[in-house]
Length: 242
Image (cartoon, rainbow, N blue to C red; front, side, top):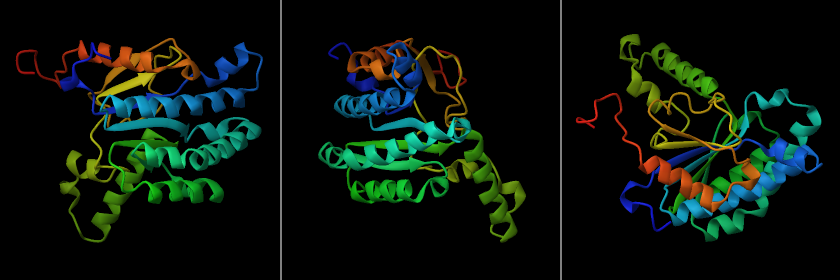
């Protein structure tokens, strides 16, 4: 950690937590055991990120496509999300973590909605780090929801169609107050974005590791940030301009 430049810590890190099922399969365990270990990993990564002065961590917890998985696994994941949200609430409050949710929360089971809502309210005053839980989330769905809100604004006569631009659509995303991710980490070696933060990741730096998510450690997080700090972010400009 001493090798990191404190002036170049990414303010917003997004994580695609991949490899839970493979981790379990290699150990002869049910897939849900991999997800249980994955939630414990997320807890340690949130705390490590806070210690490194990262301000936002967005965790891809359950995608809008994950409903296609076997019913038993989906039910188990919903129970696990509810359990984790309840079991770790006191620790998140102690660590200064503010919890928010991105996604169509209203489509989740009522018990999960209730627990997540409790977490959101109980941590609203925390400011050390924001944990943005992307649950029932899809990047395309988020853009569709923003477009619908823009259409409704036109229908109400609040704006003209010509006023719909990038700034307006950005303001209609789930959490427009968050900065775009500086760094997106994907575990388990997969080389795709999987419908995650499509709008926000236009100039995000990507880091892919072969490490399965349940095995992801503080050292892996530091390695990802070190790699990020070796890059030059140009945002479409040439190096001299950047």
